[in-house]
Length: 118
Image (cartoon, rainbow, N blue to C red):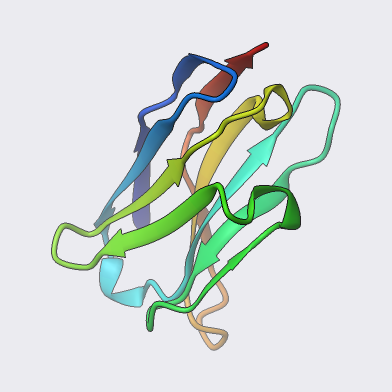
């Protein structure tokens, strides 16, 4: 089992910045990729950014150039630096951890609210 705990959400004005953190514990040696997802009211959860164990990253088009995902393998923590925030970035942000395909498990944090005011 892997436990994920997010922090760093809050209320920010349009154009502002926030940094989300995702602390992991438990069977972290099984973790392969980590990601951040978000869910806006009335919408489906969507992938925002993902980083592999080797450091390869990918982002949804709407956040490219504004968000940066990173991970500290010593602290067992993943981060999402969010700059130039827009009201459309509002939602609950969830941390996600994947295990390799042969284990086939996915873990989620409890989510942290991000609200961007115009």
